[in-house]
Length: 434
Ligand SMILES: CC(C)(COP(=O)([O-])OP(=O)([O-])OC[C@H]1O[C@@H](n2cnc3c(N)ncnc32)[C@H](O)[C@@H]1OP(=O)([O-])[O-])[C@@H](O)C(=O)NCCC(=O)NCCSC(=O)C[C@@](C)(O)CC(=O)[O-]
Ligand SMILES: NC(=O)C1=CN([C@@H]2O[C@H](COP(=O)(O)OP(=O)(O)OC[C@H]3O[C@@H](n4cnc5c(N)ncnc54)[C@H](OP(=O)(O)O)[C@@H]3O)[C@@H](O)[C@H]2O)C=CC1
Image (cartoon, rainbow, N blue to C red):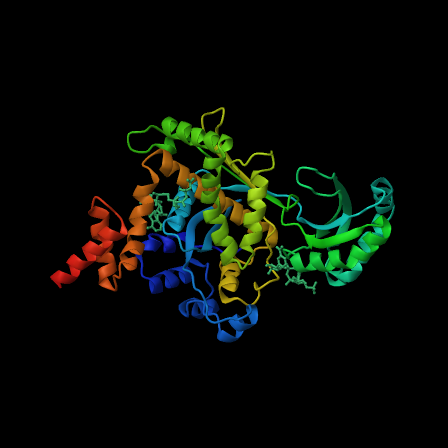
């Protein structure tokens, strides 16, 4: 870990892009030989883009920014985020700034055990099949590992099996399913391709043992054995806002957390706020955000009802304490991580974290994001902070260019209605005066 000069990043958002890149270099987060890639806007070459997907006709860009002030497990981070939504990065930075005074974010990650599943139907004698599967666990694991020996050489691979049965269901007209889970350590990779290779390789053996028909072999994106937790704590005094006391704000945040625990309509929006942060870092780090999204929402439903992923509570000494847990099977290798210029930059700016540390960073950003959103909601409302940063997007949507963008957004912030019609009117007025 190299020393970081955080003073260089002060009022980062007030600087021009070129000045931000220089400050980032001076701060120690950006090494000199990486500067050019940022100056070139993380250009994705035609050749790479065309090799990544099918029928490629262009590259679809997103803004790439930094959430500042993060202190995670005692270490400073400037966290890259790729997002199209205004106010997300400001909100994450704002919460991180507040919490760093009180120790920042603490995290814990479970072992990174990924799950592959084989779904087997038409099993004539499930009891006998289960007994045989259990007896042959070592052989199943061996066959899986033979299909991808390189991960075993690296110290990972298939480790154990777990068997689940789902009984036939008349209402849904589903047959009996025998499901074999293979628990696989994929080390620094998310491991989708490693797991899928292993699962397909063991299907014939599973059919032989169960005398059933294998429907499929595939990883499960419900990564319940790859969980990351972030927690944070702040005294009430630090929460005072306008006429509201710190205790008032704390109690309102706790109540907002309870509402999102009990009401799925609120929980979905609450969790969307968390995913504002999570997705932006997952995307910036070259990871599979669909996988994280699907896993997070399934985890939010684990009790049988969709609930908030985070919780905010008053501690016995009166502090506000927040916690967030979600499955985060991210990788630092694999997919496009090693060649996508944006993903490479993210890993560089984060000091090349290993997969566990990347999980820690992402879950901490999710919790910070959630704090800012609910604090805004229960105090001044979301529109003040969000819409004032959204004003520029409205101005651009109305067709403002160059200086017009700043002028239109300033006037929008001062006007009663902040919407596209108003932005159009204001832009027309500005143009008439020119
Ligand atoms: C927007 C703020 C942070 C302003 O909040 P503020 O209190 O006016 O900010 P401030 O001017 O006091 O600045 C505090 C710090 O915030 C950061 N900051 C402040 N401004 C900027 C900026 N322009 N660019 C970058 N960083 C900024 C910056 O770190 C700054 O410290 P400084 O560097 O000045 O020492 C606040 O109003 C806020 O957090 N609002 C919430 C915004 C939000 O959550 N947006 C997400 C979109 S809404 C949504 O999709 C989800 C939602 C809300 O529905 C989820 C849910 O319902 O739970
Ligand atoms: N349902 C889903 O989520 C699905 C997702 N995907 C996609 O799969 C991709 C991710 O798959 P994934 O298997 O992670 O990536 P890769 O297929 O790229 O595999 C990762 C490779 O990284 C190499 N590697 C180097 N160092 C390490 C290390 N320390 N630990 C682990 N591996 C190492 C391994 O090489 P070696 O072979 O030499 O061991 C391994 O094969 C994503 O693009 C995702 O979108 C695909 C199918 C389904």
